[in-house]
Each structure stands twice: as structure tokens, then as C-alpha cells.
Length: 271
Image 1 (cartoon, rainbow, N blue to C red):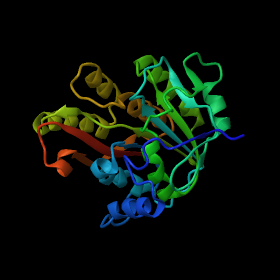
Image 2 (cartoon, helix red, strand yellow; image 1 turned 180 degrees about the vertical axis):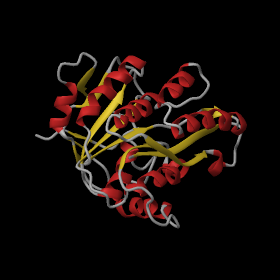
Image 3 (spheres, helix red, strand yellow; image 1 turned 135 degrees about the horizontal axis):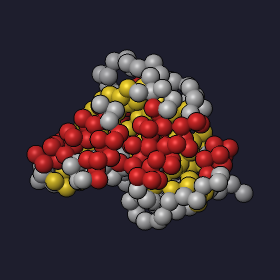
Image 4 (cartoon, one colour; image 1 turned 60 degrees about the vertical axis):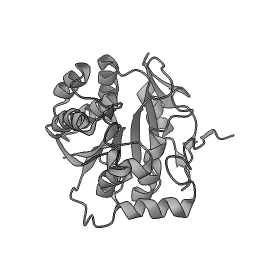
């Protein structure tokens, strides 16, 4: 019997109807031209409702349109439950309105073996949206690769480093690492822009130590800061030492309310 992680936010964060969902995703790509990067190893994409962050996410996924990846690792924070360590979904697949994405069990096994902190489980996968909202974009861009769905219940630096160190030797030209993250939450647009500009600057400069310092010292915010740093450090070991922020926005662009906004950013890491 297959164990499938059913959708939790279809119909809420994005359309549950297959055609409506595909049409919406493709509408975000309007006017983008041609992809600019040949070999992308990692990316940052936001995970809010598509009406708010879909355009920003699309700027990253557009860059991998029709590229060939066998395995895609998606690293998300845990919004709904705290648990110690890092959980990789222990089932067979994640469902989406566009079809199922199979879990790469061999990759999962290698990533978790002999680790006290990275484990196979359901923790963080029950109702978490951080992985789920990336998957329709992924399917639309490249089809149906195997996935490694990772949720960080704990984003301490030691765990970020362990995850990046374990991922690094497993990356190759057919793997992609996605860090799922939004930026600051519920500040005025002026304050949010200041905070989010710092995060964007560190990502653009490929300054993982600086980003870690700024997150730790509250100079910027990212709910998926740990996933971003783990992704960048892992990609660096695969000779991907360049990054570019592609798009930034906030929820006020849609709501017109700039008193309490949520910030979004997309970026790619490439060779």
C-alpha cells in the first residue's frame, strides 16, 4: 500500500482545479523572455498563497523551465509544529492537483543513515505548506522528478551545517536544491524593505556566514533562513558559488495595505 501525502492547502493557497492551476502558473510567466542561466544548482522560492507570492516564485522556476533534473530536494521550515531535528517524509509520494511526485527513497536513506538529527518521519509534513506550494511550479517547469521533501523542525546552526554537509557529496548535475522561505512578517513596508534588503544583499553576495549572523542577530528575517543557508552551503561544495536575486515583492503589492506586509524573494544559485 502506497503512503501518499495528500494536499493540505490546495484550494486555499493555490487552485485545486488542474486547469485553473496550470493557467495561473503560466500567467505568471508572461513577458519573462528566455531563461538566463545554463546550470542552476539551487534556488530560493517563497511559499505564500499564489496570489501574493506566485509571481516572485515564478521568476525562479522560469529559470529551470524544461531543464533536466532527476532529483529535487525541497527544504522547508516547519510552521505548524516544533520538533527536534530534520524530518524527511517517510512515505512514497506527495500528491498535487497536477499529479504525484515520487519520493527518492535511495537519496533519503543515504541522507538519514547514521544521523541522530536527520530522520525519516511524518513530523512537519502533515499540514505544512512550505513544500507543497513549490510542487505545482516544479511540475509545470520540469515534469515529474523524484523529490526529497525535508522539513527543518529546528534551524540551529549545527543542524543547518549537518544538513548542508550531508547534502554536498550527493549533489550532481541532475540534482536541484530548493529552499522554501518567505522573508519578514507583519512590519510596515518601510521596515520590511529595510530588513528584506539585508537578506537580499547577503544572498546576492553568497555570504552565508553574514546571513547567519544577521538572522541570529535579528538584522533580517526569513522563516526559512536555515533552509536557505543549508542550500547555499551544499551548492557551494558542488562548485556553485554564484547567486542572483531575481525578484522581490511583498503582500502589500496585492492588498494595498502597507501597515503589515510579508516579504518575498526568489533567487538562483548557479555555476
